[in-house]
Amino acid sequence: MPRIFAGELSSVISPASRLSPADPNFAIEVIQSCLTSAIQCGASDVHIQPRMESWEISFRIDGVLQPVESFPRSDESDPVARLMALAGLPSYRMGVPQEGPLRWRSGDAERNGSDLEREMRLGVFPTVHGNRAAIRIMEERESVRQLHELGLGACTLDRLQTICDARDGWLLVAGPAGSGKTTTLYACLSHIAGGEFRRSVLSIEDPIESVIDSISQSQLQSGSGLTLASAMRAAVRQDAEVLLVSEIRDVETAEAVLAASMTGHLCFSSIHAGTVGGTLRRLVQMNLPTFAIQSGLRGVMCQRLLRRRCDACDAGPKASRDCSCCHGTGYAGRVPVSQIVDLNHSQCGPAIFDALAKQLPALELDRILEAAGIESLRHQAERLIEERVTDQEEVFRVLGRTS
Image 1 (cartoon, one colour):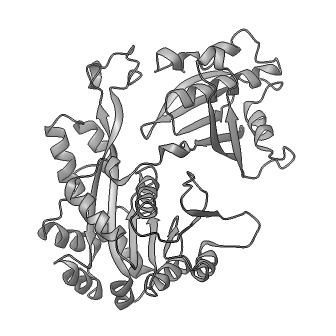
Image 2 (cartoon, rainbow, N blue to C red):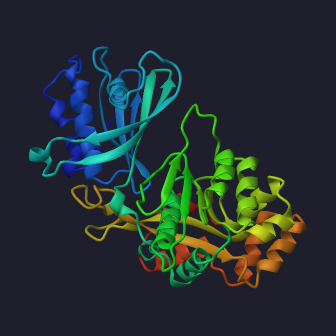
Image 3 (cartoon, rainbow, N blue to C red):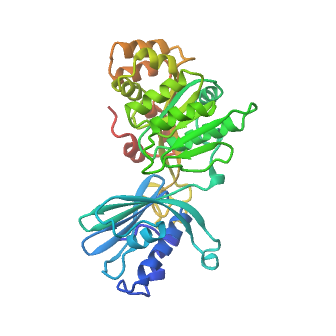
């Protein structure tokens, strides 16, 4: 498999190249170099996938999975087995998915210039050629962003701050995986915790992505029998004023959060949905009464992340393969596009709930928002293309074709 990266990423395998794949130490060296390089280049995820005769390593950088390197397989050296040992996962449980925390420390300050340490989450999944590994690299504790650091537009930021300063209600942040929902939610909690009036903040997460020292965070333990919904009902009795449930996955969790939002709690959650209208329709499809949604739901925010054109080289097809900023991809960093509606302070709120009561489709709900002057994600993305912040190919990758 050809490498697409230059610079420091081309050394993913090089420390192990002097060893034969049949050497048991080969897997140790590969994991050492792979995880250290992933941290250095700012990857959010690492994939190690078994093929019939090889292993393939890929990094997810700026939301896109990039192939890095491949090397021959050997019965004597298994990099996924090495990761399982580091995470304390039992090797005898073959053929079943497993997950576990992993604290990685490079221990190579002389070579890398710093002694890198990061918390990670390992997921192992069985395939026809053996176990594959997906490693999520958590952000550093001090990297939790503030609201003004998210890159949101002034109008969106003002609406979001208004909701954060409320004393009750529910904010749902919608979008697909990797769209920055957790980053936005953490910024909201950090804003509240650092506010003028101290409020008790409690989160229920599965798993905890980053640690915020100024709030209380709780992670569901596997095998405990505790669900997000049952944990939410218990959290209400902890005298917490602000509650976060990491994700709305089922009807029971949605009902628990909605009930808390109507009893004097300010609640935050994420949900996998494509648009604001699609989010509202999802709630109705969960059999939540429209009148209850109107009473408890304060706002919905939908967002995506678009890769920025690299300023250090010619972006697009002519991107320099030797560029250390974008690693030859033509993009470096990301910019958000987001749409938010504050249903309590928006003129379109009554029209939205009337449309929900009439069971109108999500497309009609989104049209009501646009008619009220709330700019769509597509229009924001087109403006970023005109400003040469991103390009048409990236917008198509994230938002698809124009409907």
